[in-house]
Image 1 (cartoon, rainbow, N blue to C red):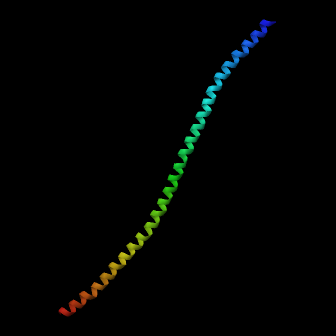
Image 2: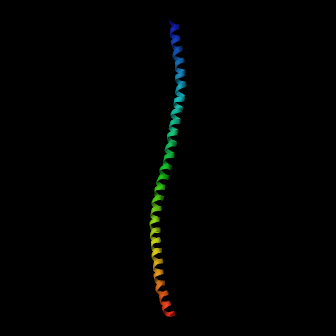
Length: 98
C-alpha cells in the first residue's frame, strides 16, 4: 500500500513542478502586458496633447487669417483712396499748366 501512495505523491509533485514552471511565464506575461498598457497610456497622453495643440494652432491660424484679410481690404481701400486723391491733383495740374 505504501508504494502506490509514494507513486501518487511523486506524481503529484511531478505535476506541481510544471504547473509552477508555467505560472512564472504567465506572471511574466502579465507584468509585460501591464507594462505595455502603461506604455500605451503614456503614449496616448502626448498624442492627445498634440491633438489639442494642433486644434489650438488651427484656431490661432484662423484667428490670424481674419485680421490679415481685414488688413488686405484696408490696404486696397487705402490704395483706392490714394489713387482717388492723386487723380484730381493730376487733373488740377493739367488745368493749371494749360
